[in-house]
Structure formats: structure tokens, C-alpha cells
Image (cartoon, rainbow, N blue to C red; front, side, top):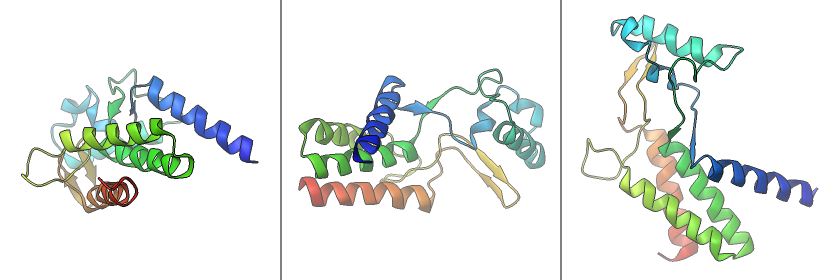
Length: 156
């Protein structure tokens, strides 16, 4: 079982690094070149977003949604590397943790002076819209915990 887990972690790490830490998000459909056809209407934006999300086929590439860096993703990756460092003490994981945390510091939302993070895409739902880079409590707390954990483990 341990070998299977180690192999899975190694494969995931390779995929992440081979893709330059970029990927798709479930709700990134509003990055499509079709978005202007929604005319800013929240219902039409929801239809586009959910059509891409719920499609049984991967539509992102043909609809112009490219893999992106994600603050949420980098927060999770930082914590993953940090856990690997904590358990193995291999310097490579410490360096990769620090890389992710530096990236997060450089890519905080520009809308506010303090550190905060949001999605790299607009989001539309029945409850309203959330603008690109608008901080959300979920991402800010997730990423904040990555920094707190790093401080406790790395003493930096």
C-alpha cells in the first residue's frame, strides 16, 4: 500500500510540474471566447459556465479556455509539498513549498493592499456574480493556513 501511495504522489507531482502548475478549474467556463455572447446576462453566463462544467466531453480547449495558474491550486500544492517535506525532510520539497508560497505572495489580488486571493476567472451563480480576483473567504483561509503551516514547520 505504501508503494502505491508513493507512486501516486510521484505521478501527481510529475504531472503538476510538467504542466507548469497550470490546469483547469471546474467553474472556469467564463474564460471562453463565447462569453461575449452572454451579453453580461447572469443567466446566460451560468448556462455557458455550467455547459462547459457539466459536458460529458472536454470542451475547454475548443472553446478557448486554456489551463491557468490557480491561487487555490497553488495553496493546495504548497501544503502538499510542505507535508512531503515534513515527512521526508528532503530539501527539494522545502524549496518547492517556498516556490509556491512566493508565487502566492506575488499573485495576491491587486484590488487590496493586504494579502488576499480569489479565482482567476469570473463566476456566476443563482446567488450572484463574483468578479475575477475578488477575494473569497474560502481561498484566503485555505492559503492563509498554508502560510501558517509553513511558518510552524519551516520557522520562516
